[in-house]
Image 1 (tube, rainbow, N blue to C red):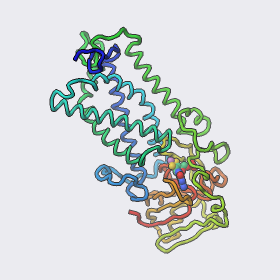
Image 2: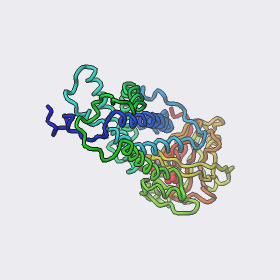
Image 3: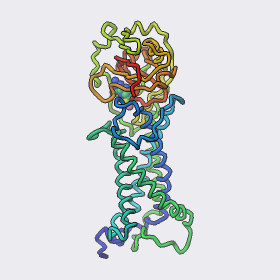
Image 4: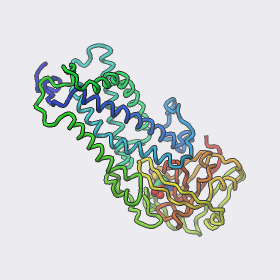
Amino acid sequence: MSDQRLPTSPGFWRSPLRGPWFTSVLGLVLLAGITVLFVTGLVSYAAYNPGLSPVNDQTPGKGLLGFYLFTWPTRPYWLYRLTQGVHVTLGIALIPVLLAKLWSVVPRLFTLPPARSLAHALERISLLLLVGGGLFEFTTGVLNVQLDYVFPGSFYPLHFYGAWVFFAAFLVHAALKTPAALRNVRRIRQRPRPESDLRSPRPDPPTVSRRGALWLVGGGSLLLLATTAGRSFDGPLRRTALLAPHGGAEPGGGPGGFQINKTAAYAGIDPAETGDEAWRLVVTGRTGTVRLSRADLLRGPLHSSSLPIACVEGWSTSDQWWRGVRLRDLAALVGYDDPPDVLVESLQRHGAFRRAALRANQVRDPLSLLALYVNGEELTPDHGYPARVIVPAAPGVLNTKWVARLTFGDLR
Ligand SMILES: Nc1nc2c(c(=O)[nH]1)N[C@H]1C(S)=C(S)[C@@H](COP(=O)(O)O)O[C@H]1N2
Ligand SMILES: [Mo]
């Protein structure tokens, strides 16, 4: 039982840093941080228009968990850039805090007997969900933003269901522990120090103070923050984003010099299909189908909007100057004065993002364009030539490139 070579023995754990103050400070940081991650995450899911099933909804059977879904607004136009930038950047910066917090309580995970009472058993099960859920959410999140969807199945349902499990356990834990954590942080100078099973019964001599250790964790977070935040910009700031993935194409300079997520070659877009002879935009609605060449579209009226691209992966561009035909004008062309939802389909034949559904409020917004130009020149092939959708405040995945077809009508 008291064999100190086994992790189930309190004497096995020797670090003098462990104790209620250290754990409580980290816990309170996570309380605030993870709450923000949860809110920005749920909001990100709403931004995908998951109500427009089955086109956008990759989470079938979300059922009650979708209770909070609302119509994602189109203003302010930088909304998704902000919420998703915060979600990903904060998530990455919190990794050292999460790891330090787990390290600080790790002796407890080995406590024997596994349960002393029913209440203790329930508490330990909730801890399993908490630790498992937390590691799962952080791991799937990081894999998604760094390695581009390396999952069995889809990222969205995994991260979405995982978030609910994690957050339920997190709420229980916060309700049980926050009062004590607040007390622990306040009474740091109290003598004698309160009893705690977090403290090692036979600590090694310290090599760093508790405050020093906290600075180390905070320094790690700041380093991650500093090497991640640049992905929410382009130009010179982007180059500070050492941790952002540098796969795909380097955008280079000029009007098309902002992040490219999938190149035309990667998406299998044949240049022969995008030429003026071959390409037609097929618009369908109440009054039938219209086929438009690029020359037809260029007759306008053309409008401009200054909008960023903001990806679920947390990167975003600064505002780009787009020019093209308003989506609501295209809706009017096929019989809608008051625009309905629209299904947008790309020339692309394979891949997850070749089609997307937009809501009526997105079609209606005068800033929403079928863009033909960016920053004063024709779209480059990698940015979606001959035409791409751009919608204010929407996730990048709704900004379909190489558009071939628009089908207006109620998709619900
Ligand atoms: N046809 C098509 N459109 C697409 C995609 C795609 O893979 N195929 N990717 C989407 C995603 S996820 C993003 S973030 C933006 C990126 O646009 P950009 O490459 O011009 O920056 O395009 C969107 N449009
Ligand atoms: Mo994206």
